[in-house]
Structures are given as C-alpha cells and as structure tokens.
Length: 235
Image 1 (cartoon, helix red, strand yellow):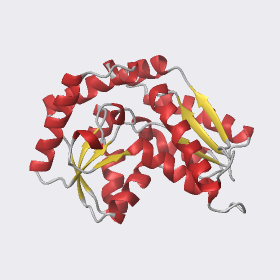
Image 2: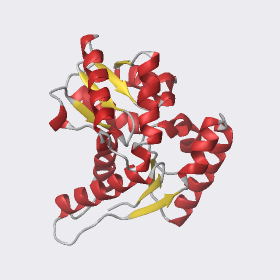
Image 3: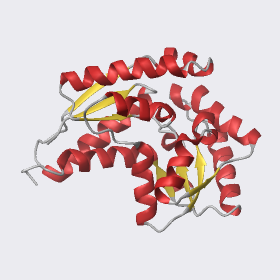
Image 4: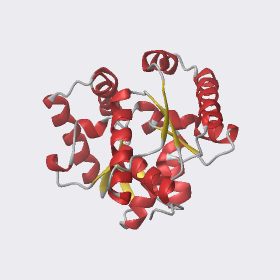
C-alpha cells in the first residue's frame, strides 16, 4: 500500500469524508483490520477563505506548495487536495512535487466517460463554476461539456457552501433551492449533475432526486484508494 498525502481542512467537513471513504475502501479491498496509510495536513480554512475573497491566489499557492512539500518530505508517495476550488492551483502544486498528484477533475471525468455522459450540470463555489481550471479540464481531457447555473443561482450556490455547508449547517430550504437549480440544468441538456464542491454531498444525495449525481469528494477518495492499492501485494 502506498501512502497518500492529503491537503485538507478546506473545509474539514469534507476532509472528514475523505478520511472515512479512503479507510473504508482500503478495508473493503484488503479486509480484516487493514486501514489506509494517510498523511494529512489540515489547514485553517478561515484564513484560506479570507485570502480567496481577497483574490490572493498567489499567496494561497505558496502556502499549499509549502504544505505539499512537507507532506512529500514526511513520506507521502502521492498527493491530493481535498477540495475542488483549490484545484485552481493544482498545476502549481503538482509542478512543485516529485510524486504523483491526483486531480479531482480527472476522477470525475473518468467516471463520466465510463458511464457515457458528455453533458453535465456543475454546482460548486463561484470559483469552480466560473473559472476554466475545472470546466476546461473536463472539456480538454475528456470531451465533457459542463453547464453552470445563471448568475443569481451561482451566487446562491456559492453562499450556501460557505455560510452553511462549511459550517456543518444543513438547511432544508437550501436543499430545495439546489434541487430546483439541478432540475433547470437538466432541462438545458445536462444528463447528470457534478457536485463540484466536496461539501455539497452533505446537502443533496441520491435519495433526494432521480438525476444522476457525481459526488466529487467520494469519486476523488475512491480514486485515491485505487492508486494506493494498485501495486499492493496484498491484493
């Protein structure tokens, strides 16, 4: 089993899901008392959110790169960032380390291609929905087109993530709003919805809708398990 390094805490609500899904995946594959070999750097999300809001992406990049190098030096054989939005800096972080970087959009793209889906609706932070680092990667690497909500709904999706989900608040009215937005994206041609923020799965799930949902946090964590165990002699 290889050791995965996780840059987490952005927010810790979703990092908790990563830790659980990765450990459950290892136990399921290897059985018995097996658990995952994980190195975790969980940062203070309040500080990161302040820098995001101020547009200080260069400074965030330096912070994440320093953290990634520390994880590598501590023995991480591969690395992932447990959040979608911070993949704005994925190329910078990946270029600074000497171990494999597991990109969240690749995990999503591979799952969509396997299911034959090439048009999706994308929900996430304003950064993930509006910047090309995510939709562009899906298009260029996998030929997948992503539709995003109208401006007012993008603001609502973004606000719910930061003011509710990242604080552990689950509100029924927000769930209703998300489901309406998802329905409208399907009416525009989306065949599935990508939950492009690792906290959204805390609010909406398969029991809430018949629309196929692709939970990026879970898909990313499952991809990490496959990578960790692909050369394991225990398999």
